[in-house]
Each structure stands twice: as structure tokens, then as C-alpha cells.
Image 1 (cartoon, rainbow, N blue to C red):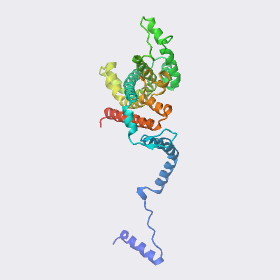
Image 2 (spheres, one colour):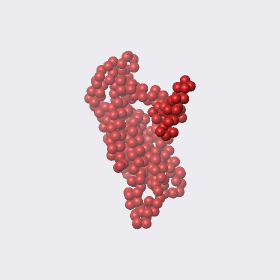
Image 3 (cartoon, rainbow, N blue to C red):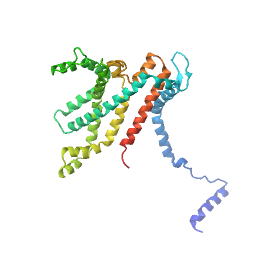
Image 4 (cartoon, helix red, strand yellow):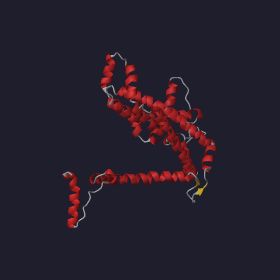
Length: 320
């Protein structure tokens, strides 16, 4: 028997002789050492305030919204459980159904149009133009300006009597329009404002992504005789795929949550031509005080956002 094999027996014999019990080494729980466990506890302690804030102001309201969507609740009396009556009434309401189509139509136009313009502007501003910082600031300024202030400016632009847009049309011999009063033009006017305001943040994201593209790719393409258009479609667009996906997701979420523009520009009119899902939630909650119905409409809005996000993720998912 070797010395290594005899060591445990000698240790046990010594323990019996002295009357002491051999203390086994400290076992590692979950495979972590004492230092690792201490570090993990410190990490949880640091994120605890943020987690508490999210749980209190996000998770609890979300759970409450799902619960109240199955009740008849008007804030003046206790909620009364009515199961799916709110959802059935909601989809039988032609105004809410119209708000769904208006929201989808608004999203369908504002998202791709603003993304395309933002990409073109970002590529142009990434070429080292003169007054580049000024142009970036000018395009980004609407993003950090209060939406109500922007809507007030567009109210003047769309004014049928002395608005800038009609004045410009009349200067070239075209008739003016009642942009926000005519149901045929009201939604298109709101779409124009939404697409214009959304360019700034998308442009900034695209510029940041463009600056991370390796210049050697363009140099190699130039040596192969690739044109500027070929470089754009074969290098720039594929390399911007992660940024495009991110911009697409936040644009859809922002489009489905549009409210300020509708509230200031049209108040959902004329004849509900510009009402959106968020505006119907506001109308149900704070004009009719039907909190149960507003919660059900919010759940449907959340479901739309979730489905659109999953579809876009599926479509734009990178190949393994």
C-alpha cells in the first residue's frame, strides 16, 4: 500500500486517538465557491432597486390590466367579473374595428417610408459632407421636440385658409385641400407627420451602424469594379441587417402607440377617420370611464405588438 493510500487511514486513526472528529472540506453548493456566492449576492443586491421598480410599476400594472379586462370596472365601484364580454363587445364595435385598420394602415406606411428615407439620409451624411453636424442636428431635432409642439406647427401647415401647404400648392396652380377636415385626406396627413417625425432617430441608428462597417470591404469591391449602387446593395444593406431589424421593431412599437399627434391634430376625426387603438383606449378609460373595456383594448393592442414583433423577428432572423 502506498503512502497516498495510507494517508486517509492515518488521519482517521489520529482522530480516534485524540478523540476529535475529522472535519470534511466545505462542500460547494451549486458548484460555486464562497467568493462566487458572495459576488452573486452582491449582484442581486445591486439590481434589486431596478427589479423592484420594474415589478412595482410594470409587472403589477400588466397583471392588473389582464385581470380588469375580464371585469366591468368604472373606478367608482368594485370590479364585476364578466368574463369575455368586453372582448366580444369590442370586436362588435365598428369604431374600434376601424381603429385597428387605421393603426395597421398608419404603421404600414410610416414605418417603411421613414426607414427608407432615414437610410438614404444616413448614407448621404456618412460621406463627409460639409455642414454634416448641422444636417444631423436638423434631422434629429424633431425627435427630441415635444410631439404636441410639432403637432401645433403641422396644424398651421395643414390649415385650409392660411396654411403653408395650401399656399405652396396654390403657388404652382394646384387647388388646396381641407387636409385635417376631409376624411379622404385626414389619415394621409397624419401619416405624413408620423413618417417625417420618425426619420431622426432611425437616421442616427443607421449612421452609428454605418460607421462600424469595415472600409476594406468597400475598397475590395472598388478593386473589383463595383459601382456605388452595387456597393450599397451588396455591402451596405446586408451589413446593416441587425440595425434594420432593431429600427423595424422600435418603429412598429412606436407606430402602434401613436397618440399625441391624433389627440392634437384630429381628435380621432373626422368621422373616426383617424382614430387609433391607443386613442380608443384613452376614450374608453378617460372619457367614458370604462376601465374594464380600456384594459381589454390594451390587451388586444399588446397582442398585436407581440405578434408583429414575432413575425418581424421570424422574417429578418439571421441564418445560422
